[in-house]
Amino acid sequence: MRYMVVVEHGPTSVGAYVPDLPGCVAVGDSEHEALALIREAIELHLEALQEQGLALPPPLSSSALVEVRAA
Image (cartoon, rainbow, N blue to C red; front, side):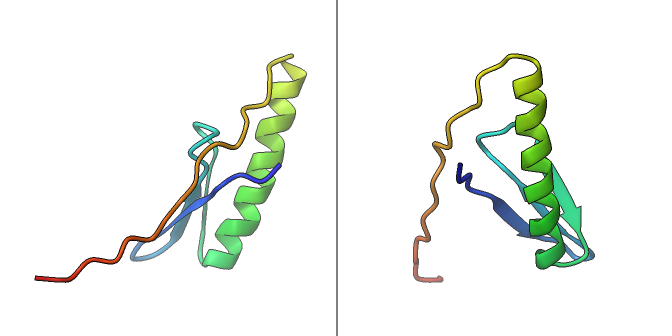
């Protein structure tokens, strides 16, 4: 499965979350670390859902960049 991950850069850390998997988040010191941690978090999240006998949410989110003119 291929889930969209949103990466947010903060002043001291980088966060990542998966819109299709509520509660699935990770924080790292760098984007590389945050992405490695969110990959692990996704795997654990899906494993927990399977152990509970729940259906795996399909990856439905997508992203797009929109260019606008600054005022």
